[in-house]
Image 1 (tube, rainbow, N blue to C red):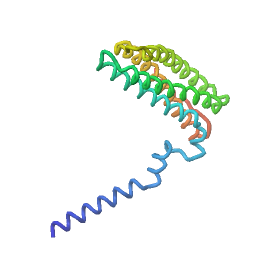
Image 2: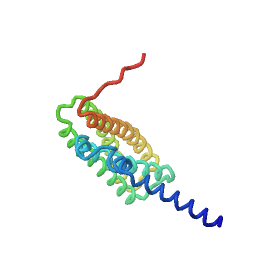
Image 3: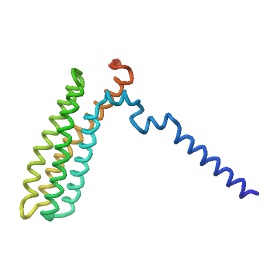
Image 4: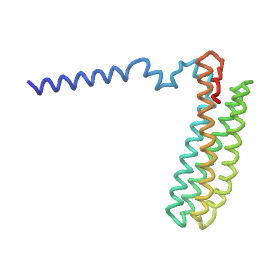
Length: 187
């Protein structure tokens, strides 16, 4: 009898858990930042794509950094391949930012944030250029790759944080119908 009671309790718990996961509130939260389709479209596909590309580039740079840290010399073919992938994701992020700029229209806050993000991506791209030059050599030094990857990561961290803040700001504007109420600053 106690076995059946335990089994019944487990089934009830599983049922409750499945109802919570399938509830409409959770579906919208998981499928698009808690916004409906028209509100998400106001945030802009360019911002979303740029954020994803920055994240991928950051992951590539982190992988290269870790790989470089562990080895004094890196296989040139592998280094070049990883560097090219990093460069492609940086390029995708920059192109998506151009789309995001168009989507921002005349929104001064968004345009200012995008300008700052573009500067960080440009700095990361400049470091990537030097990294790629190293990766195209016959003997690739891990310490040089580490240095460039570290600087790329610093710029991408800043760009990613600003992009996430911009997306949140645009989500709040979309949720409130385009108005952005500033909260009073504490002194």
